[in-house]
Image (cartoon, rainbow, N blue to C red; front, side, top):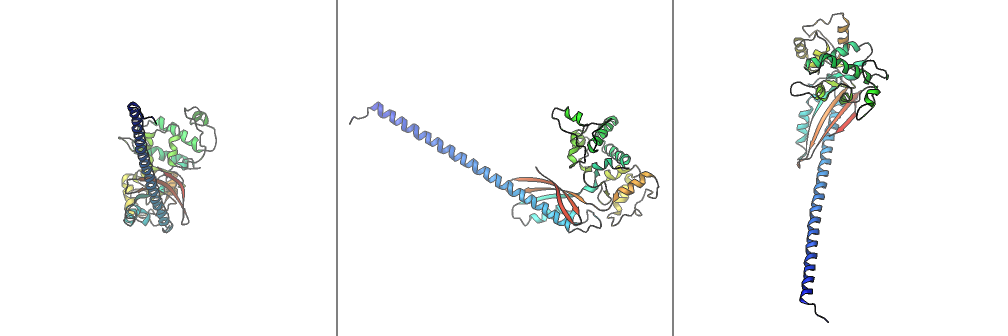
Amino acid sequence: MKRLSRDSRGVVLLLVLGMVALLTVMIVNFSADQGFDMELAYNFRDSLQAQYIARAGIEAAIVILNNDETAYDSEDEEWGGFSDYAMAASTFLEGPVFTGTLKDESSKIDINSLIAEGQQEFRLLQFKRLFDLLAIDITGEELEDFLNALIDWLDKDSETTFGAEDDYYDSLEHPYVCKDGPMDTPEEILLVKGMKPEYYYGTDTYEGIQEYIAVGTGGKINLNTASDVVLMSMTELFSQDVVDSIKDCRPFEQVSYECIQGVDFADTSDEMAWVKTVLDIKSSRFSIDVKGFMPSGAQINIQAFLQRINNDTRIVYYKIY
């Protein structure tokens, strides 16, 4: 048998060393990939658990609303203290935590009711006053154009005089159709011609309309939960003093105006008749924002709108973000 020459043995050694180096790199890469895959798996697991925790918070809110006495709705009831309930419930979870707020949507202005028959004049005036009270940087002409477009978005016909229909929305860089129907969520208003994000979300210099508008409430405004801004937007007769008087009378357990000072509810004007038609003490739609946290740092946010009919509360809108 021939012996390998010294040069040949050197080549073999280099090949062996090269193979060892290659295998070492492959093993290191495999280990790194395996570690990365494990990290992804753990993140997915924790995110899924955070989602389950948040969803449990929503289910808890549904139970609270189903057990609530519906003669009137006020923030001094159990549903009004949902954030405290979430904090207390989380102490039993041994690690995972959920936080959340449960709000009455009937404390806000229902966009879909802007075209309510026989009420459009007063509801449009209310919407204009909302922009004025929030000191939103918009001219009277721009606001008028936007409201015309908003009416076209909500009404069922496809005709327009001053607003916007499909011909406008088709011409956009990313076209879409005009709804010609009620909005499903408040954010949908961002699709309407003339609505700028800053009008909705606000800026450093003024607050947006986001916290003051709703959909699906039927247009009623709850005396027990409406904010100062929403109450004052209803009529110029509701000054800050009147609103303070309303808050001093809470909770209203029945619709009564005797306690309220500073305004004549016996006024027979059409405006006062509309105000008394809209004011209520009950609510049927609520919104809930819940955050689920895991000790690893995983977090899931869920927003849902809840519709309550005869103590049967159901989710009508659900968003994970």
